[in-house]
Length: 442
Image (tube, rainbow, N blue to C red; front, side, top):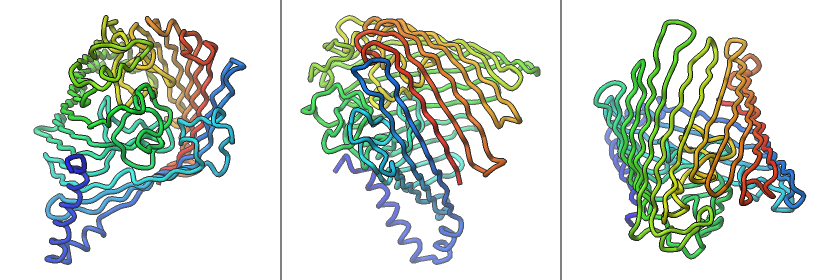
């Protein structure tokens, strides 16, 4: 029963809602009259191109819909919300599993799920939300680079003592990955189909006999003003790792077309007794361990430049003797997804996926035609202890087509990874990933 507490909160709020509407029919009318529905249509085509004869190229096409609904407020701040997501390949999936990019929507021709179904109370300083919901934290978020996002069965409490400063407490119980059809007690270290899940594109290092994941306790704070943006978070990934994370950015507002900035970040992890990775002798980067221990830091320096931005970033992940993966960063909701907040993470992967070592990344972007067209280019270099040296070249084109149809966006992301060891890329040959994405928000 404890694991279902978050979903139960929504039923409690529903009982309040029913009582109130019986007492005051006008409130009931306002709930629906002031509600709204929005959503997004997505058409994605992904291609994985390998330069080794032993691994076939893989591709996937999907047409997806994300529908969100939210009622108006009643009783001074109560409301309900929900989201339904569905994706369909229109019969284009290959009959050969190895030729399907299963990270897009899995190997099947269609998937569908309720990604959100929550009740909440919100006023000027307090937010309480319980049930299926999207989260937006550095190491536990939507992972929204595929046709449907990740979501969580969770309770979230947020406080806003003053404008720009927020405090959060979160308890998650289960989650839905980007390719799952429901909530499950696992994470990205579990194998595909664990406990009947349909999760794909994950790390999959744990054995199928591993115990279920009990979720996460998390607490964090964020602060923003004109020049400073900072946050600090603590995560207890239960029986996996305890993580502390901080980052901050200072921007020097010069009143010109150039506004220099400096960003810093630091992450520290520990875990030993009753640790699932340790108890199952799970190997990351070929190394099991007697504890979880990792430490990383990073810096990013750059400037805005007219209608663009340039920056140079560096991250260091310390090697730790006797630790799982030799000091691997344990990230249950981003590993293999490349959605972590490290400054040098690329589209394909970063230090979470390549292990202890260091990386640097140079990036430039510029907006043209009244911000309708954005061009991005970057180069990242990884020097690691267990996966060798590799580098990634990245290009991104984003075209806002509001002039054709309001809400329509065309985007193409392309990245090429070269180098590495231990089959970092199949056959240790080059790997090119192209992602064509067309979205329509309504």
